[in-house]
Image (tube, rainbow, N blue to C red; front, side, top):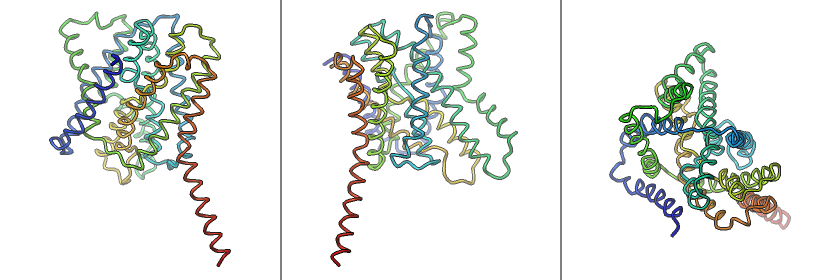
Length: 374
């Protein structure tokens, strides 16, 4: 069994472990306590370490720009494609899926395969590309989430624009993740990195950040509740997301005329990474604000159960897809084959819609025939 596959199975096993612990940890307060530990301790520590490890090479600055471009294109596309799949406009489900589908978590789903199949240098390229993705998931999506929240708040009586802006600025400062980002950026501005910090502090922050991945996966297993209707929708959307990523990779390879086989595969597999946990962190922050403010509107801005279901389904989906790409590397090295594969995933995503439409037409034709015969 390959090393990358073993790492993937180990991650899935942690989700299964969380699922089996449901009987032991079934109280809402206990699960919320784990979530608080992730969002307030483990996640900020991981972000702090990730930011202070950034070593940008000027020749490769195009990689984070391309990754950020992918995020923004997918964010725009999801806004228009989600209603086609039956997701209601201006609903918690649409806002939740718009936060998740454009995000990437290459550290969980992509990096283990890159190091196994391509080696250290392509892994460094992928880590640099992830800088652009981090800007998107940590900053852009947080501002997007708060924009939705305060836009809904402003529609309620008694909320003025001044208080809206003040609350937004306060929430930006108070969030542990944002405080960590500001601190890390200040240190980087003084040319400081992890090695510049005292040894005891490095050890502490590294140990705390190390619990992030297992804790997140166990939490997903504990809290996820996948309804059959949501599962069908999620599978269709993940297939559409994969198809769009294949098309964008094909366009990029055609425009850049990349010659390096390792870089070609990196351009193909990186956008196929699983959805990120960080949008869930932002949505949870908004949910906490809504609980504190006790808004009159019973509907939340985001659907946290749906977001956990997407996270639980996305990891195995992406891992299997990336493993398939590396196993058939030569096939996915040409733009024409990527377009063909992307078209296949689009058809797979559209299949439930086509079947539903065909069923409606068939039922309608049968009823029309019954009316004629009557």
